[in-house]
Length: 372
Ligand code: NAD
Image 1: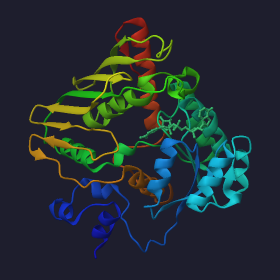
Image 2: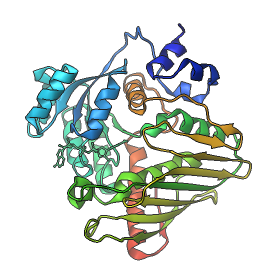
Image 3: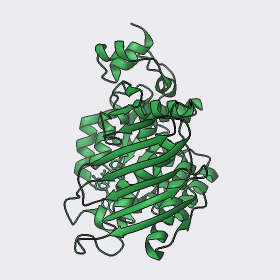
């Protein structure tokens, strides 16, 4: 079996799909799967054993270049459970008080921070100071000031800082980017990003400003922000934004329920986006150009992503986003691989600067310049 077929098999892609799939840009962005891989493996400890941490741990079972070897948690019963499930030795288990000791552990290369947003800043800096590479979930921090400090700390410690932008490795997304770069859509004129869901439990950290840093924008709206950038290929230079709140008990001061926002880009293209914690069925991207268009729905969930362009349906393979992300992150850290769309701290800082500007635009009601 050839390498590509092996790789696709690992990602759970059917033989039928394999025969239909043209060999396109996405394959170049993904570390080639090789069952006999004997290169350096990225040994990862996960911090925060919650719902997304669990998803990443399960997905890492499919990795060859990255391996889950450690945990950091405040709950001893969870640590014991993960030790049994993922064969994690006692010496690689830490809690939130003692994880600075990880600096003395030669068997861990990187820590993946998957905790509430408001904790990322301090935790990432502590990991960097322990001399380990950092992978951090989105949003990297709760504002640009924090983001800059995290980048500085990682630079000073000479460790890499990568952020969990899993869509940057998703095959259909990469095909749209390839087509745009090839000029298939002509000059880009418009992007629409609709991102939202109805949030449940009012007691969860996502609705606590201290832990979340904000409301829907910090959690789901960031997909429309980041998407508007990788779909158009530009960074916005101004924003206007309007907030609406229908439930002041669930969505307290500082927790946005719904924000509509509009961007202007240097080329003259514009975007119209929606971020909501109180509307269902919002997971849609539309990119318009003078010669063509791309539409994706769903556009950022765990998949399968479904998309079509003016040229027809997108037929790229279905992947496990987290498996492919971790394979690529290992290749970035150890092989110097350059992803098509960056996933480093500077990329995340751009989103944080835009989020700061969106909140300013909401609060002032004014068109706000964005200085990236
Ligand atoms: P979660 O609530 O399921 O898990 C959070 C974990 O952090 C829990 O294990 C909790 O015990 C731990 N924790 C540590 N200190 C805590 C504290 N002071 N308060 C509350 N919990 C604390 O949340 P999640 O859905 O796993 O989200 C975690 C991070 O992952 C967030 O930054 C979120 O935005 C991100 N995320 C990313 C994606 C993605 O697709 N990239 C998807 C979901 C979540």
